[in-house]
Image (cartoon, rainbow, N blue to C red; front, side, top):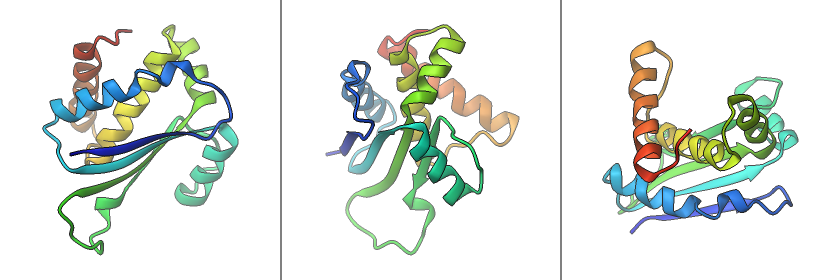
Length: 148
């Protein structure tokens, strides 16, 4: 059984995240994942800026940051995989939704799946990695019914 929590630390009501658990369940099934644990945490730009500066040395807010715990091989082995945490900036998601001309629901969903794939070891540092990761993101979102 998978275990994840969606935490809203923004202080705002975000109706666009109501369907996020369904998307996450769909993605976990599509990726054949069982016994994984992770969190999705929605924050404001100030918080994600602080995290980005402290942990990545980048002095600006960003849209999503994933902390993949499996990257650290010193963790105790368990019967389940503790994947880590995904931080999403609600403000950045709003900006990008408007910029890309799609809904906030679509943008938050994209960022959540993007962050999840990072937790699983996917990356987009090379053109080949980017193509693989972004194709999988779009496949999951399209098959779940979240279109551009």
